[in-house]
Image 1 (cartoon, rainbow, N blue to C red):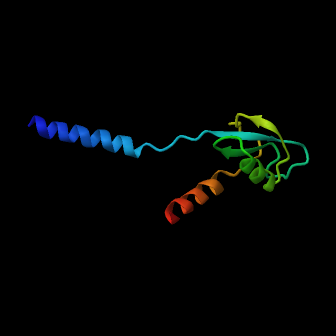
Image 2 (image 1 turned 120 degrees about the vertical axis):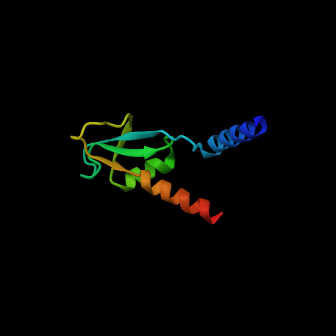
Length: 96
C-alpha cells in the first residue's frame, strides 16, 4: 500500500513539474502624440523590452516614448503585439 501511495505522489509531482509554463510578464510602451488611433496611448508587449518588441509596436503605429505599466482603465487606447509573438513561437515549436 505504501508503495502505491509513493507512486501516486511521484506521478503528481512530475505532472506539476512538467505542466509549469515559463512566466512572461507583459509591459507597455507609451505612445507619443501622432501615433495611430489604434495605439494612441499604449502598446502592450510580452516578455522583456527588446528591439523586436519595439519594432512590432512601431509597426502597429506607436511612436514609442518609454515604458510603463499597462493601464487597466477602459478609457485608454491600447494596441497589442502579444498574439503575434505567441503564434510565431507556437509555430516554431511545432516545426522543430
